[in-house]
Image (tube, rainbow, N blue to C red; front, top):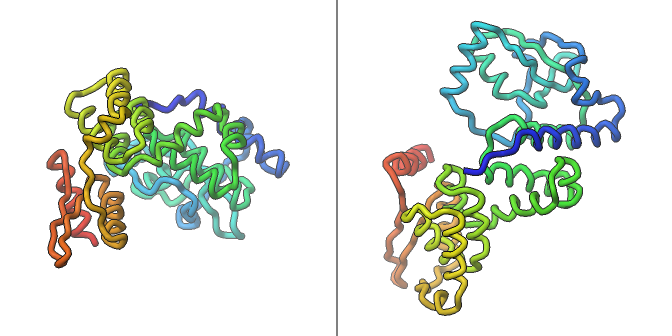
Length: 297
C-alpha cells in the first residue's frame, strides 16, 4: 500500500497556511503556533468542525489514546477558532478531542486562531492529510474537496500543498475508478501503482477483470502494467462479455449499493420484473459489513 510522504505533506501545510497568512495577517504562521499562548477550554464549549474530512475513527485507537491521556494528560493542544464569547469550533484535533472526552477531561489545552469558513475547510483538510495515515483514496478525496469547495485549480492546489501538479492530478484520477477498485486501495489489497495502471483501461468491466487477476495472482505493479497492455488490445476487448444494460433507475440502485458497500453488486432482471441481486464479498469480515449495512438501514 502506498504511504503518504509526511515530510512532503509537512511542507504542504506550511505552504497552505502561509497563503492564509497573506490573506489575513492576523492569523499566526503555523511554525509560530508553539509560541502562541495555550488556553484551557471547557470540552463542553467546543463544537465539532463541520468541515472535518474524516468521519470514521478507530475505536480501539481512541481508547488507547484516552488511556494515555489519563496517565500523561493531553500533551498536544487542539486548535480552535472562537465563535462567540463562550463557544469554540474545532479546526484541528478531533481525534484528540474525542479521546479527551473518553478520558473524562472537563477542559483541554488549545490554540485559539482566527479563520473564516474557507480557511477552516482548507486547514482541516490539509491538517487531516498531514497528521493521519491516509490511504490514497482518502488523500484523493481531500484533494478533490479542496478543488471543488475552495475553487482551486490543480495548479494552485499543488502550490498550496507543496506537491507537483501531476501528483495532485494522479491522486484525483483515482476517484474515476469503480468503487470495488477504490475499496481495494482503501484496504491495502492493491497499491496506488496498481490503481494507476488500471486507469489505463478504458472499459470499467475490464478494470474489474484485471483487478480480479491482480488479487488472485498477487501481481506486482510491473506485472500489472503488462496485464493492462494485454487488456488494451482490441482482440482482448472483444472477449469481454457485454451484459444487457439495465434501465437507468435499476442501474442507479446497483451503483449506489456498490459505492455504499464498497463491493461488486450485480443485478439480473427479466422483462417480467423478476430477477436477482448479487453481492460479492472476499471474506467473512466483508460479509458482516454487508449485513451490518442492511441491519442499520
